[in-house]
Image (cartoon, rainbow, N blue to C red):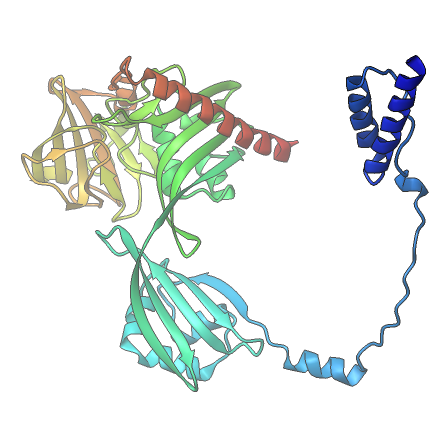
Length: 449
């Protein structure tokens, strides 16, 4: 009986080897062992399939006749390709100057752009518009596209100048912007704005970064080697960013201490910036009413530049070019908007707790008495009206009618805590944010090493 079982198992093993001989030997052995164990036997399964390393190698030779040299030269001569280049319009642009920067040498195209009213309106005396050209290998124009965002419109406009036959046609289209985000990082070597310029971060994003951490970091005395990372919104047209938006998250390492922030908005509530633990970073006031400026005179005794006598300077002067935007540092209501003696054009805003801010020497006033203003809203522009020796903003902070040092204004809290219902969503966002910013910091650290 035993001999009969052994004979049956040997026959089974033979059939298994025949069935799976085309499989790799590791798979064959595993399957054969499984089948044999089901039959009640115990075998050491030998190699049942060919080893790939032992298979014969076959070489195939085929004669190839190359194309003649003349045919290859002719193919190169008939091959065409398109060149692409992008530029930004300048206030001094002419048709020839713009096309020259785009690498276009085409008198007919320049004449068409110069003579077409629609093209002239879109391209000339328009600073900062993105223009892309498609050209032949002979540097003649095939297609020119200009893109820009019109005021008060959520989309963008596209001007297209296209070659048709021996002439050109022009059309203007309206399209939707594509929202996105960008992650960037940098190292401070002299100033924040120099570092953000090096990192190709827009000025509006750099200003937001300074506002977000104004209560934690003194940006007037940064240390060399301080570093930062930021994620911010972008709005793209045809794959190119036309506008940057809100900062979504950021980190700033100052003197070895790490500060973090992320934007969070509860449904039906006003959004704001928070630390990863949920503490609000919103301050009742911004640290400065003018972006990208320097303090030319502080809150102290000084020699008055016009009266030529020692007097208390009751505010801070910010040196900036005429026309620079002046913004309200906090939510409030306009108390006064007009002209006052040495102040020239001035706006006074009432805030909470009997506090006021004043913005003087303005070149223009953009608000009216009784108007509600929000933090960051434009109230006017830098000028030199009143008793001013040059363009600057004179900024005052008053409490119960008494002058206070405006340098302390950003220290007042003004945020709202996160509700218990929104806490889980916030925690998920905070975790994702930390991971994203850590990746950005690793990049900037590697560049510094």
